[in-house]
Image 1 (cartoon, rainbow, N blue to C red):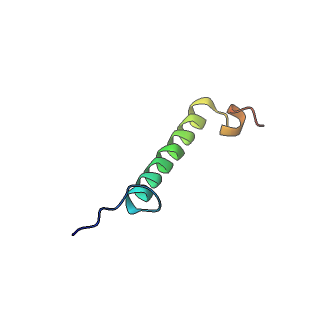
Image 2 (cartoon, rainbow, N blue to C red):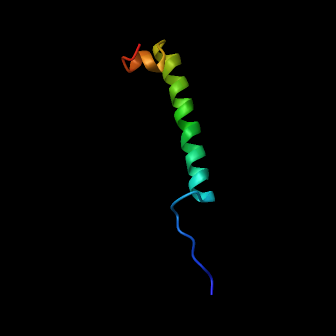
Length: 47
């Protein structure tokens, strides 16, 4: 019998998606800074 692995927890599937979404968020953050001329913290009103 084959054992099915879940899609939750520290699996290769979850880690791949976590890395992809982190890279996407980083690129969006940099692009937003370039477009507005303000840092992310300034845009959120934290500075």
